[in-house]
Image 1 (cartoon, rainbow, N blue to C red):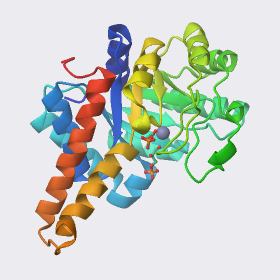
Image 2 (cartoon, rainbow, N blue to C red; image 1 turned 90 degrees about the vertical axis):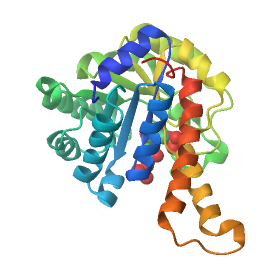
Image 3 (cartoon, rainbow, N blue to C red; image 1 turned 180 degrees about the vertical axis):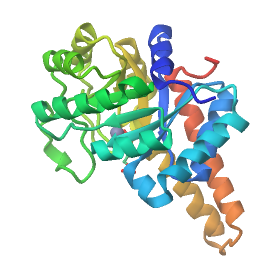
Length: 288
Ligand code: G3H
Ligand code: 13P
Ligand code: ZN
């Protein structure tokens, strides 16, 4: 059942666990996410980026998620979320399609512009029952910076700014930067747990951690304890899907398989297993 993302996260916050927000781009990845949620009895957020909408069509992807959620997994609370929306137009497009949650990512802008634009998004979404996520500080991507000697201080969320940002924008959830990074690559050697505690003290809205693909269980537990109630995961599921796809398509190097259903079906299963592991680690399994 499609359910408010704010409600899903507030429930996780109260229950001391976190939900996963998993990226989809096609039918098989969506099935993997929702089958994993159904099997583990886990609330879940299915999220779509602008690039994936360009690839598959925003309306088409939205309807795949919604149909599977309603007809295959009606007992599972499912949020449908725009991940890293980079413009107000992208947000408006998703809202018109029916998404019940959006992220406006102004993290690469000045604090003033990020605040002003995020606030505009909140105002646009306010009476439509749509959850809005903002980001302060910024979570780096592979290729965006030379990760060999990254100056983490440039990326981190400043707690005092986070307090004002949340108050001034009215966002429902906040993505934080505490040494986490997108993709499989060098993160800060230890996440800045003290910073997260400071943020939690001054910000009451649910906190989201992007770049959770390579987070081991002990780190996951440390940040859940300190207030993270949603983890964004993309790379881990893509890698599970693609590794399996390459293996099956080439029959482990012996021949080529042309049965697309076999190749994509096996890849879907591999992605599902990776997602189940995440749901167990985040503690969302068994929460419905
Ligand atoms: O942070 C989100 C995604 O991992 C970026 O994926 O290539 O669909 O924009 P994208
Ligand atoms: P990873 O690709 O590192 O899992 O990050 C996903 C993410 O943050 C999506 O918003
Ligand atoms: Zn992200």
